Image 1 (tube, one colour):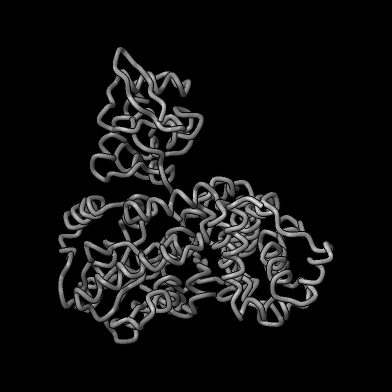
Image 2 (cartoon, each protein chain N blue to C red):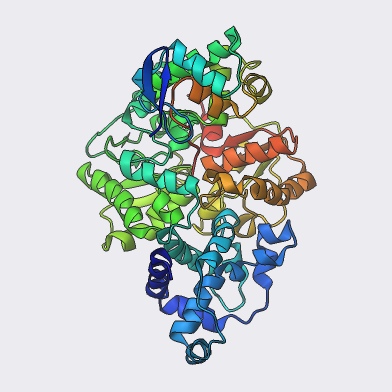
Length: 111
Length: 419
């Protein structure tokens, strides 16, 4: 597994760049992961990232896109629980990019 | 020949059983199965003809088990299977087959083509030609017990929310309950409304029920990927839980393939009959309706149509219960063309929705559903499979069709008589 160093601290990511150990995560790492994804973090981004951190601590699962939009809609209102809003924040796939920046594993869908 | 290819050929030789040999021998090359397959009808590309998807397996069958095939192979006129061919067939066998079983229904000589596809998948999976998304889901099932990685804490969190919202108890590990309720991953994570509906319906019916902490999930990726050992492990977990809790009936959730796995394949997988009954939730609700234990009030004002989940309706035979239930709460139920056992797949069954490689072709195949829906213009689409529901929502969104999709059990629960 590749190692990455941020502010003197090194941590492990998988082949696709997802953080291996959730406990490694801090805001500095989030900023690094966001830069890798070419996402400039604004308060609206942080709202989604913090939502995901809380979501994961409750359900221990990284939500796929439809799950994410529904759960955000419930918590932050229908305007934010929409594909359009989330794609504006995370253009290359809201669930995948936001989960990665929040230090979660890659989201998984139904089978 | 690479080691993985040799393994694949060996597995294919093993899985070619008497039915498969007789199917290949009986195929009259009529091509009717093409017209039955939504991947063919929506692309007009003959490579999507279901029987053609089985070509690697047919070659092994001919070369190993027929006199002429052996002779042609010996003369060098029939070429052995190659790695490149297996790679070429991967998208045909996985991305563009939802195991919907419509081809098996129309075959004039009665070939169960979908059974053959599942057997071919066994060989492909062993040779390493299964898509990454499906393999990852299977890996999670082995390691964590669930294809989406849903563990007991997630279920417990949802139970907490549902108990707070409804004021009802959601029983866990209650020995001797009449019903043991199973869920799909998607229901736990995205449609907890289903579990809430069960709690309210069981309360009204006065039935005892329980969830089981060691077997709460019914999804079975072993069935989809074609790994029968894994399918057996997953079924055995449920059997162990149900027999330990001494329940009378296990209820398969609003999930298509879970019903196939548990109701139809399960006893063969574990090699003995169950000591409990398996019913789909819609069968249970229909039974409660007949017994007068399911009482509803009010009617849906909107025009409804039902999307038949393939594994439940065509493969599973649960055709009338959803319609009986819908008539309790609707005077405006319209059927699409080909309703019931000939209905068209959402395009995402059989592991296709978990397979990133298949996304583009899945959206093309959805045009079949779109055509069906455009013809009857419903206001609401009702179904009984969480995976169909997600795939339908994505397809509808892609084609900018504004149509809400709801689960039937939830809809019934929202109409429960209040007395």
